[in-house]
Length: 113
Length: 114
Picture (tube, rainbow over the protein chains, first blue to last red):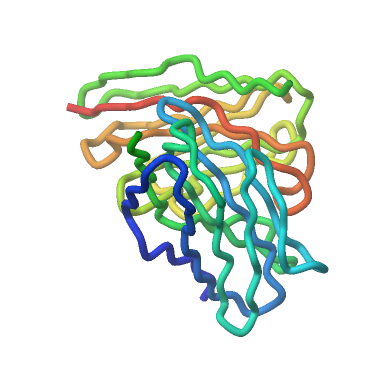
């Protein structure tokens, strides 16, 4: 069965520190992988996506993610976090067998000054 | 910029009431979606539509129905609201299938059923 696991419910970092949010997926075919961000009181916005090719993907707001097939992971990273990055982050997976996205349970990021 | 507007930010309804959640998008997108967001469960797809008057069940359609009479408008209907339908409801639209074009979300409607 297709699934997405975000093992960290809540992460707290200091402003300026580096960040890595974990995402593991289970998918029978080649996955299409996404990271979405939900700022407080807002809908979700696409940060980046991976379909094929280079396994390191650059997104908006200085985020990047790396696809590791051997580990079934698609972790999101940012070298230096800003206070405005405080939000909830969702990993999602889809594939050619279904064009519906399956979302993870989300990771809430808190940033301390 | 794509705008997806959900008519209500907060709604409080009583058990057994018929509830309508309205969603309008302004970018002529073919595809529209309704998700439910609950803590610890993430986003779950309720219904979606790839064309006017077309609808498909998502992963949790029980207790819900939808209507899409016009391309820009996608309504979620709770025929008889129950307390377990208390949740945040998110509407989204996309130009093409979600694998190929990003989902654009509204700000959500927080529904409380008492």
